[in-house]
Image 1 (cartoon, rainbow, N blue to C red):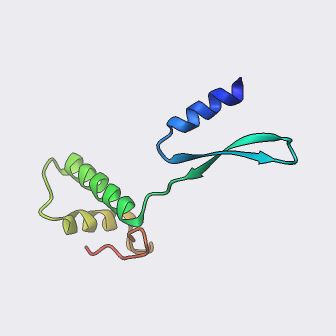
Image 2 (image 1 turned 30 degrees about the horizontal axis):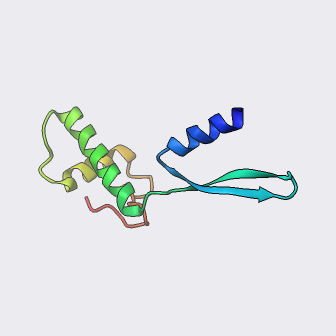
Image 3 (image 1 turned 90 degrees about the vertical axis):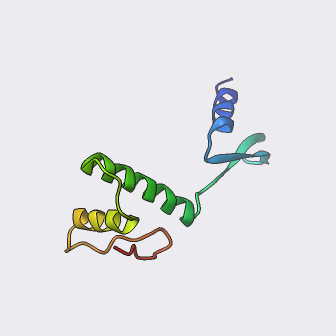
Length: 95
């Protein structure tokens, strides 16, 4: 019963996909299997840009002139002795 409830919870999760039940010989039973759905680099970057812009607006009470202004602010927060801020997929943010 607990296993069935857990399966129902996992089926409702947004970042996993139910792939079916698979027989596991060592257990002598079927086991529910799931695949993890990872966002693409573009999706991660879009989320980061939206969050960074939101934090910029919260901090300065105004919209940025461009995302470059936000990126420069983020890079200042990180500090000059840290590695340059990077987009997912290892592309460097242009400030």
